[in-house]
Length: 114
Length: 112
Image (cartoon, rainbow over the protein chains, first blue to last red):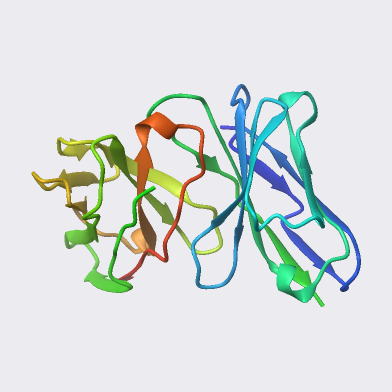
């Protein structure tokens, strides 16, 4: 069963460094979402792709954040000049289009910025 | 998406039924009620969803009030593996393709 996979699972970095996370969605899922989750809170939406097109961005996604989904397959989320406030779990989800769409989440990448 | 209200936490004993409530008094006619849960150190996983009628699947049952202003997720026999945060989420069927809006959910503890 090939679910959504995310790499790396854990990342520790120093403030000011750039980091990149990868998400591989379920094959044939053309929708892909990124969420961020801080301790004790539910996940918060960051951005959404349909195929290779980035259709929606949250205002949480500052100009230090960028996401891509080349060729509509895997996606990357890059954070430039990391800050301690970026420490969180970054979750990826994928889905097929439909009125009763179910999102399938990966295990997340836990980022710690020192 | 309309707002939902859930208790912060609930406790259960193993092999007993668990009823997790959710209030959504401002639900619209095109909102589906979705439930996801998040086990420790994992991403959320889909549990069940419904519109008006009660729904059953292998994981749980969803009981929806007649006026749709509240719903209850029912775990028929709780196991230790059901200890998780449970999220009740409304999704407008006419806005499919937008993000899930999570609240803080209900943290379910299960004791043996």
